[in-house]
Amino acid sequence: MTGVTFLTGSGGLPKLEITTAWSTAEIYLHGAHVTYFQKRGEPPLLFLSDQSRFESGVPIRGGIPIIFPWFGKPADKPGQHGFVRNRSWTLKEIKTTDDGIVTTRLILPPDPELRADDITVEYEVAFSDGLSAEFIVTNKSAQAYAFENCLHTYFAIGDIHSLRVVGLQGVTYLDALDGHQRKTETAEAIRFAGEVDRAYVNTPHRVEIHDTARQRVIRVEKTGSASTVVWNPWIAKAKAMADFGNEEYQRMVCVESGNVAENQITLAPGGIASLKVKLSSEATA
Ligand code: TA6
Image (cartoon, rainbow, N blue to C red; front, side, top):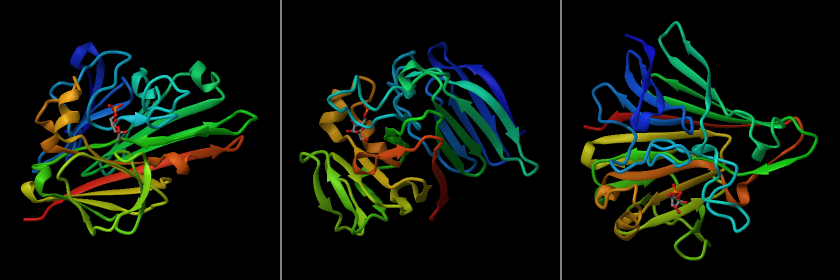
């Protein structure tokens, strides 16, 4: 049965439950946060921490956090990763196409941090046998508007120790664990034996997550994105995060698509910026 149900989710926060012929999903109005997506016959695609908080003003840990209008924690900004993931969004439209794809469109209410209504933000997510998410910023003001954006996606995996992330060989990255030093990715497949926190820049490439433990490949395709961030907190940082289980680093990886650091966007008056990510998966056994 295809459709959308309005429910009261964790922490009493409103959420939509989406059912299609191929999948089930959930999206909270809090942060317009997709927290769950599962294709029939496969494990869930997205990781959600068992310790996540579900409170206004606090980000949900996992799923697809929307990072805007800044990434990281610039000295002149309050808090990490912008503020829209902590805001309550408004559901504007639900559509179901003839072939059963369900699309939800949410908007961020006018926000004083965004010059009231001069900068508008909307988010459209299409659910089928995969998930497509489009984050759109429109500059209605007479001045240019500079920002960073990122869909900070947490993927559910079987075991980080055998995971490989493929598609970034030869790409320049900023290593957050080494003073954001510029380095070049030399590996055909990124593997994990400790914390990894890298912002790959000037890369439009598709990335594949090879999850040997679950015999699945997850594909991350993107448009309107020049940066890909790869992150796993590993042991120490996992323990340091109150909203993240000590062992959960073993079953998640972030592969994030956006425009960060030198790829930040300066949107001219009247301009529209679209960041789009298409997530798909298939069994490899
Ligand atoms: O995307 C990687 C990163 O910037 C890491 O440095 C880590 O801080 C992660 O984001 C999570 O940030 P958050 O604010 O969601 O805890």
